[in-house]
Length: 431
Image (cartoon, rainbow, N blue to C red; front, side, top):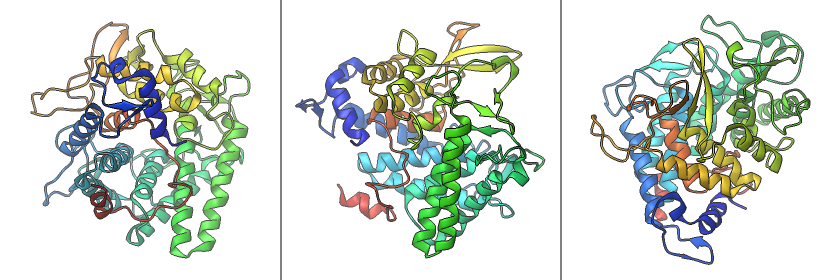
């Protein structure tokens, strides 16, 4: 069942009134696709993403989408990738080909700033110059996923294949060290040195990225490279199931990370034994691995993060202490999982809290911009403290669009096949 069909059933069951919105016309538990509230949210969030994009033709960052509204001094490849997915989704839902045009411009920027030496993307850019030269695998993998969602493009094939080679370099024991477990290491640090920890989210994103590269190689007629990518993806799956899956705790989820010897690791000593969204990344990303879509995974997410008001918390280590905060972004991410694990009531509660949290910027701010979600509200140690009003990140807008339209299929293909290039004409034909 498509996830968007799941939403129509979820919202037919819960009703848009449970979200504090007016219900659209419905029949037989299915809300019509032109429900005005859902479409208005989709457009507002897509417009916010566009507002964050550098549209100065003379700018070296032309097409880049800044992490928040403002000049392109905080450009994060993985966030740009999620913003592209949001724009593509909005273009299909509304439909509006203008959003696809903006998505393609963002992709063009990402192609331009790819590292010419190793095929990776750096963690962060100031316009077109790296401001964080580290190269976490997820940044490269998420860009590849976004390029694939836009559709095969022969002009971008070299970009895709070079990204795949970087991910496979991270998988090589000669680079990551430790055991030959099939997993990617942590990429390169700011000094260009490979890191040995195997992070679950890096490997989950890398799986779909390498599947995308395999599909592109097939279309390009490079069968040998397609086979190489296929072998790499299979090893990632085996590594996730064998080494990252947490069999000791029997929770149905995965370790945050392991070292080269297979020992579980946490982002910092202050967060040791605390749960993280990284542990359910394979579920959110629809990986074909053990326990994905199981009821047990959905229950673990609820037990670990969801509060009585429906919100989902996240733990941050900041200023020498652990801080517990409620996030719209993590609430939407959890909802994407719950659509698939048989927990529609939990998904509805998370979406309802997000919409009513006061963190959604529905009115124009000091920059004359509406849309986006203030990043968090604190539970501990300072209850009610909020992130700054301008800290409204573009990836949250994607997750909001996806969750409020019934979920998202991160699978590399549509309807079981490899998608051909998606064009503005395709969107226009749907109007």
